[in-house]
Image (tube, rainbow, N blue to C red; front, top):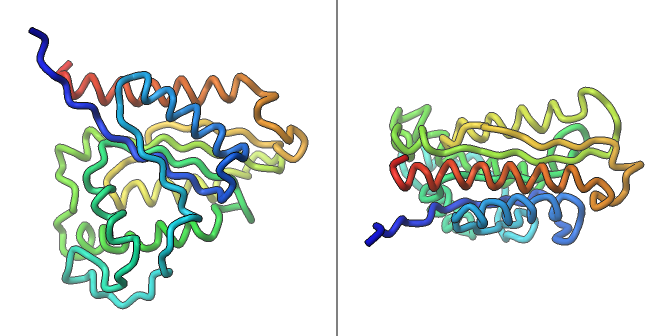
Length: 207
């Protein structure tokens, strides 16, 4: 009898408020790829979560949670338990949307544990397994248009011990309009999602 392999868990974080927009379509392809590889994926839409911005109360300097009791409290547990993360966001003002940035800023809970108390909420062994896939689109056709968003994503990945692993980027969306007219980008997201899922399932199988 073949041993039962536990499915790995991925969080798919959408930075756009448009659940049927271009960014969401790319994220859905990555999710499909990860699920086809055998992973369990939960989608979180940052814009649809009810939470306050970080108030720098610094309660989390000494505690593993935040003093602001809102929907982020449950999110922290999900991010501690996940095996990897997919972030999909449009570029806005050469960075990421404000609600997504506020979402990331609330992870001071993880920041303080790792950098202030010197005891990350994620073990070193689990950090070695966790990866972030970053998907982004931008309206403008500029060579530097993704730099701000990528720096933020990389910093977030380090804070939560889910290092930046790979990316799918597509600029010039002001002219493209509909990402479905670029099937190669949709396919790239599926492939990267499947690759991420496959790596995680191989780890689960001890390969």
